[in-house]
Amino acid sequence: MVRCFLIHTVCPVSALSAGESRVLYSRVFGPDDGVLSERHRDLSPEERRLLQKERVTAVARQVRSAISLSREASGRLIVETLPGEENLALQDADCGVVRLRAGDPFSEETSALWLGVQSLGFTLVCEPHENLLLAEGTLRNLTRHCLEHLHMLGQGSEVLLKSNRIDVLLSRLLPHGQLLFLNHRFAQSLEKEVAAYMAK
Image 1 (cartoon, one colour):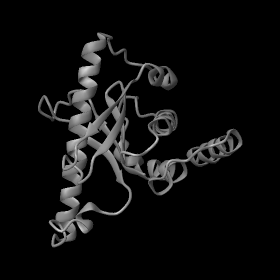
Image 2: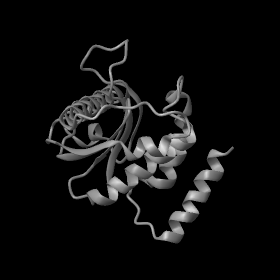
Image 3: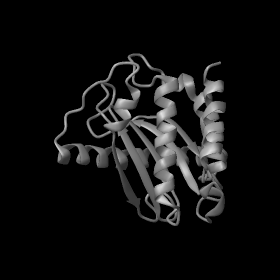
Image 4: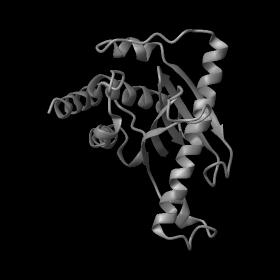
């Protein structure tokens, strides 16, 4: 099962200090860790929400660090793409996996799969037994739809205003955090359904 999906910055943003990452969108699936653990059972709903926000921010920081290291090691320059060249940006995206130890930030060990597309990071946090190849395919599919339909790479793109559309994408491609094995026909039908909704 996927624990969470997030979109965050991976390049410096003027309002942030050098090592920080801004979470633009996050969605957590499954039972709340705060309800399950004895330590956090007495927290109020607001305190649980803040704890969840801290966990998502910790994941974004670790992924941002991994993307920076990957880009430095490869030595490739990031070329800004123009609107309409989203597929080209996705092909040039950096990708990888970060193993998150138990307790940092979730109570059990997880894997964070990430795609770094220019200044944005797209991340899926999965439980350790998940099929990582299937998760990577799902992450690429989600990222492609976000880039193509929501034009996230353009100037002035406001991800926060498009959260309802991202929610719809997640409900179709990652229902309740479950990775889907898709045959060709079902994938085509899902593509048509998503395209019809995004055209509205």
